[in-house]
Image (cartoon, rainbow, N blue to C red; front, side, top):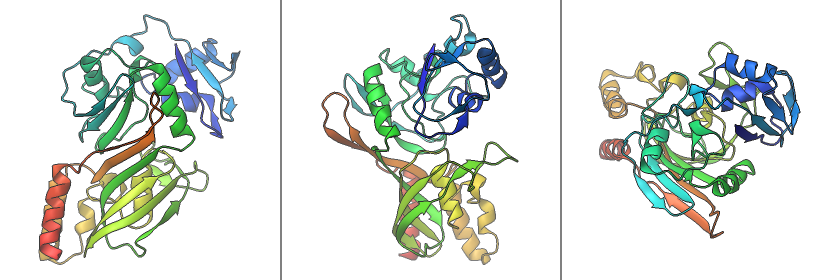
Length: 320
């Protein structure tokens, strides 16, 4: 059984919402569960086309022998633990690590590593998301908070929903920004032609990101981002929309094609930066929230990984 609390004003069909939030279940499986009356909203059965308004409680009943929900195994995966207590874990996630099993990924995820590390993980969001309060893209590195108890999970998830959690990301982006700081308030939705890509669209869900340029080196800028909302690929989409895609982010225009058109010697230098990153140059630097047990305001920081440090060193040496 899974219990999901719908965020405020989500305005989304029931089947679509479940597909996005229970991605270890196929769409056909979700449709069957709804048709069989195994999905309730505030205790009532509804159709797939039911449009969510926000704050509903959805309960999904899945058979205990359904392998899609209980076949995840503990695996010894290197984890960098920044902080641990009885209620939470603070993880410094490495780039290249998927957060939890989903379509096309059954193991070698952060979830598998967490299961090996501890048996104390919240199960609010089901067996495929034990302890997972929020996510980072596979190739985004940095800070994550993991819940060890259901009460801690619900308390922190409520802070995310109310947008009280302060998340800070650091990125290297293409180009020199016209304004050194500002806000990007542009709604985002999936591209109809490619559901793995998101785009700014007036019909999308609200998305708000503030930014501040920390340094610039002629062709590349180091930028701090603070997303207020938590849409998928939000920073990557917003940065690209502003004309400054993230370095090595091929999906949103930050890959090798960006180097074309420069003089050969410049292209060579910029390609050397690209080669340092085998992923988008985006790092979750810090997270700040109210601790679920002590009620103190806590902040945890993940120092920049080696690829960032190496690239910044080269840029500073070359362009000052």
